[in-house]
Image (cartoon, rainbow, N blue to C red; front, side, top):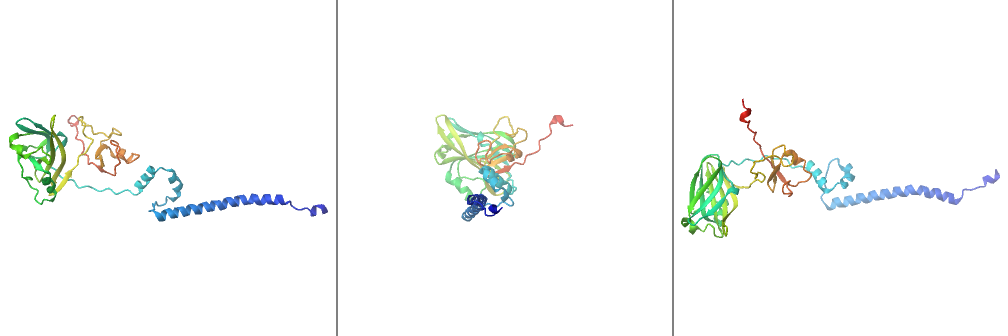
Length: 303
């Protein structure tokens, strides 16, 4: 017993337990230092750039770091979406289909062919050899009534109806001095209807194959306001198909901007994984919803 009272704990054993206890303490200190460094880094980034505020979503910070930027932008778009607004409709009484315009030049006359739609009888006027300066001054003119230009013109009545073929011929000797196919000169086709008009500016060029036409732009005057006509792409099929190109079930009703392609319905638009047009794959920043008319009941089903 006396021998055991004088026994002491070996120094190596004591150092072992002290080192064992220092390991978790060192880990805890490193963890605190890592969190302080991360907080300092976040503070530096927020002070040097504009922060992104997401209410009650800070608990998912680690998950956000695992998401690709595309999905993170979708989260931002859903929480900070721009509210939709209604666009005012512009009443147009007649429309010249620009893709149907065709020029033919023979030894004695020039023939203009196109297809047009009209709600009521209208008047078609063709101004030959209009200068570009005269067209540019339209936006600043106070009086926009017919006639629009001081140039040689041809006129023809247009009856009410859809998809009408219009053929207007003019004697070549009468319009030769206008220089309608010369550089800096264009052909202006005006379709006047009750309350306004639609103006189509056409550039004519002589080539080996004949006279080539290019529609530069279309303007419409309605309710005293001048507008520029921008076409919608996606209805060029001859069979008249209007089904959504994604689901092939619902009708197309969405125009994406700025490419102006109409190819999907509202449901398929919301299911897109990125903001790219399904047709041309270009990025779109806005879209328009078309007010679709109810389909008429078929005569066979009527009682």
